[in-house]
Length: 180
Image (cartoon, rainbow, N blue to C red):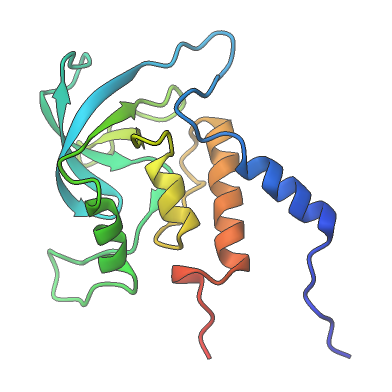
């Protein structure tokens, strides 16, 4: 006998509670942590999860005025720009989504849990859009990237990203579309 894959209403309630918290520019981290935002202009989009920015005003210690930023917590499909391979499914859509914010001023926030840079020297940071939403979470929510849990970062954001991915999976959005 086949069992229908129904999700209990309690699971939906928990999922909605998680989605409604965690990814806003006014987020409280914990009593010991002061969140520092820096304004940057997105100068170019390399792919869905990697951008080039220029700091406006104060440049954080250890950064240059212009930096490449790898957005924390999301893995967008690869365009494979430096190989002979075809782009992965939804790679162009992920790039196009991020490219909507080209030449706009956004907020960048370093995460006190993760490293400041990756092995390629890119700055690791969260990007907050003008409307207060988190770019990584929006990519995940729209099925244009997957939540990366194996590199830890702020717990509340991790929960929010995980909930966004579960929602995208349930709704078969983007990379989570069913193949028939």
